[in-house]
Amino acid sequence: MYNSRMININAEENEKIKVFRELDNEFRFNQGDLKIKFQDDPDSEPVVYSVHKDVMKANSGYWKNLLESELDMTEGMDPFRFEREPFRNLLELLYKGKCAIYEAKIPEFLRLLDYFSFKEVLNTAYAQTLPHISESNVLKLFLQFNSSILVNNANKEKVRDYMLENFGIVHKHTLFYLFREEHVLDLIKNDRININEKDLIDVLIRYSNNFHSHMELPIDSEERAKVLERLLKYVRFQHIDAEYIKSHFTVIKVLHRPAIQALKDIAVNAKTLSYQELPTEMRGPKRESY
Image (cartoon, rainbow, N blue to C red):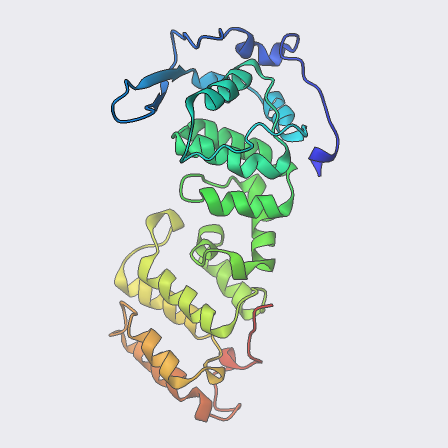
């Protein structure tokens, strides 16, 4: 892990971090366009800090320093219970390029940025730190921010590989956030997802009912039915109780489609069918998560 060794970047000398040197300690910035407002209690006057966005996303050298140091600047800082001075001190160190946070605290630190809506900053920080940190933190960051961050192609493989090995603790909808439909189909066919048979039904039905345009799939109901049929026929229904199958099929939005109805009939009766009578795609041992 990178936090096992220390590097030093002197913000006073490093030309790449000159933006930090140009900011004064009182946070009087002419071009600050990100706002942070603190109010200690309902009766007090709110205090607004103006934050220069270039400070936080200036260069990768800063993030490297932030990543590799042992120093923990977020200790005891809960974004939902902030005191003004500790955060002010943290910002001052950030502005000067002298703040360092060891790896275990990076998810927490990025959560601070997310809490204060530093979207551009957050994306920059995420993209620059992800290649350097441990797999467990990669997953933690992805789960934490997948609603607001697009994982770039350079980092997707790392997140995908870790997600497949740890699918039991991953939000189910992320399967289709990270993989196209044909890739999901291939993963299911080749038993490359750490998931049990019942959870697989849940994932596929939820996907069919809720997929969005960012997944690059049409929302047309006919297409939705085709997608669901292609995916569901690889579930090994013969290993699942009929009542469980019936209860889950009732929530399918395209249940009225003939192909889905036919698939439901096979699924419900799968336990009574011989191996030879099962559709080829459904044959195989029961999937179990591990």
